[in-house]
Every structure is written in structure tokens, then in C-alpha cells.
Length: 130
Image (cartoon, rainbow, N blue to C red; front, side):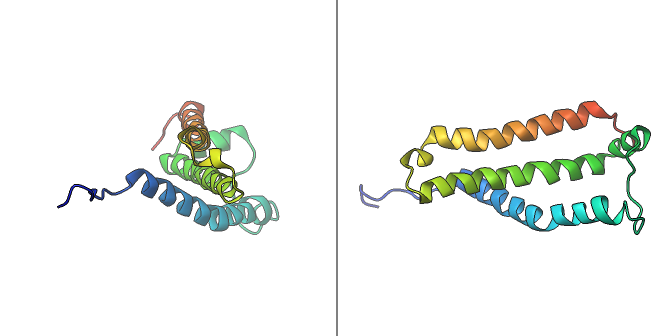
């Protein structure tokens, strides 16, 4: 190996954010509209059974760990998708600061903060019940 060649290493951070971007896009395109259709339209029309708006029902449903995971996925992944898309929109528009590490910290850090707030709210709102 000559002294000018560099050893290629995988860009795991780049891979992680692209994964979050892709999953957030799928969830934003498929899961959110289906959730709105079922919970917001078909349920109130009486076509499908849904969670009603009473406190006792919400607390009993929100105590289920799978429901907590569903809500976390429904919120966190689309925020990572949004952060990645907005950052690369600014890169494509020619904003040089969008490629910098502070810009990445702001965009992806914002998505992490939203995810952590969501986790905190889900863990403190209703106790886990199996």
C-alpha cells in the first residue's frame, strides 16, 4: 500500500441518517395517512372501532407497550425524515453552512430532542400495563 492511499472506512453515521430518512419517508407516506383515515375518519363515522376520546380509554390503551412504540415510531421517524430533507434542501439551494457539523447538529439534534421528549411523555403519561 502506498503512502497516498487512504483506508476506506464505512460511514456508519451517514448510513444511520439515510436509514432514518428512508424509514421516516415510508412512515410519513403510508402509516400517517392510514392512521388519520382509521382514527380520524372511519372511526368517527362508526365504520371501524377506534379509541374514543375519553381519558380512561386513552390511559388504558396508552399503557400498552406496543401502543407506546407505535406512537414513538409515528412521531420520531418522520422528524428524522424532515430534518434530513430540510438539510439537503438547503445544500441543494447552495447554502454552504448546511454541510457543516453545526448544521447537522441543529437538524438531527432537533429530531433527537423531539424523539426524547416523545419518549419522556410516553413513559410518564401512563404506566406500563401488560
